[in-house]
Image (cartoon, rainbow, N blue to C red; front, side):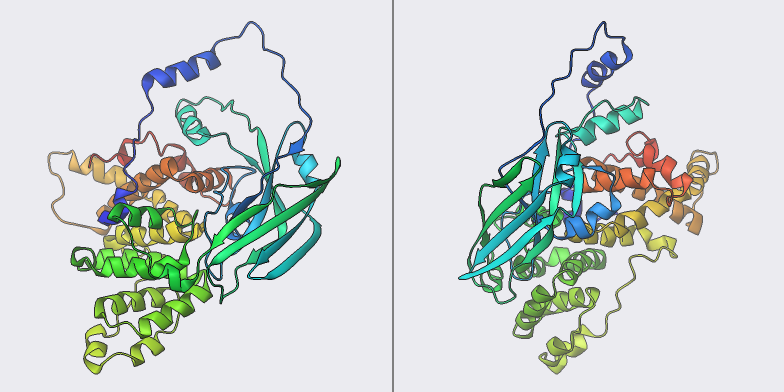
Length: 437
């Protein structure tokens, strides 16, 4: 149903211990003799800066509730990437404290200094405690209200900083100062490595597992300079790209990543133009097409024989579910796009297949009858797609914090159809969404 490299990253432990669950729920149903007094502490901002992708604020937080999983602190940047600077506040009234806070910061890189004047924080979110999603899902299955409380909030600076397109290897140094109701305060400086396209394109993956981890976690730690190395690794394994569904999923994944970084795409095109390997060039061209880029320069550099061999491949629209026979294949493409971009729309589209619950019930009843169906029908295709959608959403809800945030938002959103909402609420308990492979 899903490509091998893609499935490997989602096969984590999926249960919740009955003993642990009982220990967690039992105290909630009992009446405590007395509640211990709450400890109060004044709001304050942590000294350490958090550096995360621009897309967290511009895309992800626009489709989440006020309580979210925190973004990861970036470990490395490539040319064309843009970041936001965040500060974490704890204590009583921390959200109000952040709303009254201004931040200024300076970025020094390659001998140049870029200053950003004091300005209010542009976005503030409360942060979930570690493991909060796991507990929330277990409690929801038992119809128990979630007692977990957030202990921190995150505010993002209004301005971003982008790595220059021609950046060489180096280190960016960041200093920041905040103005709060308590006064001016300097924060601990931060540094982050900058890696050029030239260096990143020569990256060598130590194992297939490292490759899978990069792809599945790309929206947390995007490394656009490594995309060319990823294509070369994929092209080197005939077992991966000989199957059309694997190629479609991979091309969607790489193409979506390139679409978010035009500077990376420009470098990618230049390297493909000088590439001698036909599989690398062909796979890269398909990815560029998915990203909406012109492959003319690469095609013009090909021999006439290679041009004929490449032909004019057509890439299916992953958002088109009008053909039930291949909807699951489009799920693979959409999940690949989510993995690299962290965008909301792929998950939102996959969730629409949960509206085919009626087809699943009819199919499940028919296959258990004395006269089960022996021929495929569009209704059976929709039934299978329903199960695949629920299984994959359930898996990502457990293994990807951003996916869990998006699912919570869809459940709460008035724009989500009631039937889809009811299905999203039972992702972890519906037998139709279980898989044994």
